[in-house]
Amino acid sequence: MLYRLTKSKFILGLQCEKALYLDVYKPQMAYFPPETLMRFRKGRDFEAMVKSLFPNAIDVSQHCGRNIQKYPEMTAQLLEQPGEVNICEAGFVYNEVLVLADVLHKDADGNVSIYEIKNSLSVKDVFRRDVSIQHYVINHCLKSIVSFSIIYNDGNDNPLYEELLPEARGAEPLIAKHVERFKEVLQGTEPQIETGEHCLSPYECPYSRYCSGKITKQLELGGL
Picture 1: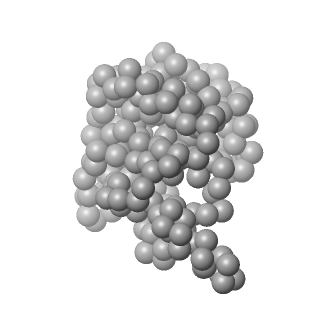
Picture 2: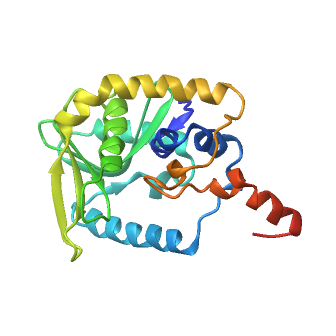
């Protein structure tokens, strides 16, 4: 299954269309400071802890590795199995957009609950958009979604839950417009967008150094 966008690229495109373009065509220009890498590690640790709460979960990433094209195929096969199943990194593609759900639970009646895990003390707006793009894709692949929740941190590594399914359903028309816009961006030339406050919100953009010329100068000098 072919895809042009992923969840992370969609979120990046909402922040800056130039960053989206660079992430597809010039990913080697990305720079992540040490504190950002540390935040990623802590997030992965919290995610692993939460996933361990789902018994007998099958992690698609452990079977398919970097062969992302295989994720939706394996996910579909697992969902065809009778009875309950917990799937980590469940893959879905629709309209050239790929998403991987942190945890998918299918009960014995075939009802599906999806969980997005964030190592955060609150449910931020960007997380809501994260869930909305996932719902946009998965809802066109499955018709049995009964819950779509964010799992976040109470401050002591205990999970808290917030249901976002109604909100995600309501956001679908806007998400669809963004998807079409971002596909247009990726068919064109590199957008000319000046640096500004958007480079820092909701995340520090990994391409801000490229846009300001710092990475180009450092590469000429032989390093970052």
